[in-house]
Structure formats: C-alpha cells, structure tokens
Image 1 (cartoon, rainbow, N blue to C red):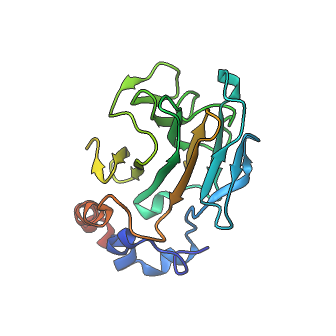
Image 2: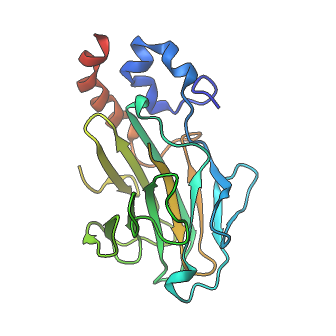
Length: 213
C-alpha cells in the first residue's frame, strides 16, 4: 500500500509531503502484522491483521513469541508511530513492544536480542539488544494503550502510555509470553490516543529548512 492510499494524519505535516510530494508515491508503510513472519504461538485474530493473541504454553523463556509487520519502516518518512491496546493480560503478564530488524529471532520478546529494542509491560524496563534492561517507565497491562515511535531526524525512539509521552531499516515488533494475552494495533487508520499530530508538526518544523534545499 503506497502513502497515497494510506497516509497517517501526522505525516501530512512532513516537509517531504509538502515539498517532495512525489517521493511519497514509492514509499510503503507498515500497515498490519505479517501472519507468516511470526513465531507459531502468535495468532492473528482479524481480517485486518491488527489483533494478536498468544496461544502458547507460556511457562518458560523458550515459550516467548513475537511478530513483525508486513513492511519495514522507510526512514524517508522522518517519523513513524503506532499504538497497541492491550485487550487481555494477566496481572504479571509479559507483553513487549518495540522494533527489530528483518533477521531477528522471533522466539523471544523485543529487546532481548541484538538489533531489537523493546519496552516491557511486566517490569517497565527498556531492553536494547540484551537481557538486562534498564528502568524506563511504568508497567502496563490490560486496558492500557502503548505507543511506539521513531524520529529519524535525531534517531530517537520514544514510547507513550495512555496518550502520555514517557520520554522525550526497522520493523514494528510485538511479543507475548502468557497464555490468553491479546492486543489490537493501530497503525494510523483511526485517531491515536497520543497527540502524535502536534508532536510530528513540531519535529517537521525543525527539519523543514533542510528539506526545502
């Protein structure tokens, strides 16, 4: 799907969209989860490939499972953002959301392996390619909406929880490890909980002089 067919509202402020509109015609954005690029314990539950459920045993680390999107994120867009809403999860559930490269093992949660990064709900830690993460933000569980964005202008990855920003070639990635955990995803086809439009407008305003030249 090209950006002419699918362009999230926050990208309409992009300097590329303003001054190099034709460039968007060849850009392909992630729009849904890839049902054939996932560990078998992850099930895609709807026709839009946005709703995921974990169906594995969820007993040991080797039971973890993740999934990638249908497309990688094109850096040319300058900014990419998506949200997951957790529909069901146990109190001490284990859901991770983040990004990874195309060759990252999916029998693991985001961030616990090289070339991946993940914010985990059970302990609020951020993992950057290794198993010992750092304290990052609040824990999250059923009823919460977690957002994940990449700012390619300053190479910053940011996360949001329930519409609030936690801190000032990758694929979106989501992983689960407890039986019955279920999430649904928004890649921009409906309004986000976080005000990404204003956030993006500020980022693009700083980048605009470079894109004019």
